Amino acid sequence: MGHYSNLRISSNLDQTEEKKSNDEISIEVKYSIPLFWLALFKVEDITTLQDEDGLSYYVFRATILKSCETFKSRLNIWSALYNDEKVAILAQSFLQYLQRTPTFSVELNITDIMAMMIDPFSIEANNEMVDMIHFIEEKHRDPKSPSPSKYWLPKSFELKTPQNRYLDIDGFGESLLPCFEVDRWLNNHEKTQQPVKNKLNASFDEIHFYRMLLSKAEISPNSSFGFKHRFLFLTRIKNKALRKWLFQVFFFNEILFFCLLWLSLSLISIFFLFKISTVSYLEITGIIIGLIAFSYFIFRKIAKRIKIFNQLKSPA
Image (cartoon, rainbow, N blue to C red):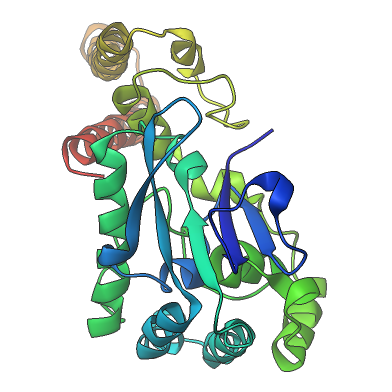
């Protein structure tokens, strides 16, 4: 089980599963959309299709020839975005791989990935795909421009392990698209480093979890894919309005709890300072230091929740 992005390269993208040709290539990446895949397309390549139930959904589709030209025009992005020439080497290798089948077409289906956060059959899905291409186009104009916080983007732009390459960058990896000089460095570097955090934990953070709670009409049991959180029980509520209301109640009650906790600690400290005459200067100093430490801890908790609230008010 899981959520996947899917890249298909075929001479006929409309052929049925039973009639797929032997030369068709279909690649799936779990919980991620490799950036090279997005860089193959323009907004005009967003295509509307229908599933077996007659529901409309959206994919990226273009000929290999057009996609290669699009990708080639954006080659300036990678070394600057990642601050690493190895990514530019991978981009050239990726382009050469696609150019081997110039008469084919390519399709990127990210419906399953978008379903983690939004209704993939709604116009919101189309708008999300437009945002993805706008991100690539902005990086083409200025690779150093600020990157938004999006569930479909890597948490950081770095190439340090084979996992970074496969999940975030080209989706092919060493097994499908060997690149000796890059793969050798990545494998050697991985051996000297601590194990990399699981991709789903790195990409699916608290903000994304809250946005999923507030935006999705209905949440499937697998949508949070192992993400541990105190509000996880809210995913069982199918009614979006009720789920949103309960989230707001619990969230603001947390802020209120920390405010009351700080107030209680402050009043208790003041009581000890002014009502107990036998308190020594050393004990007074300890009480003040303790109050400052607790205040710092509590205000960090409050500030974090206020920051999250402001982020949730802004567009994803």
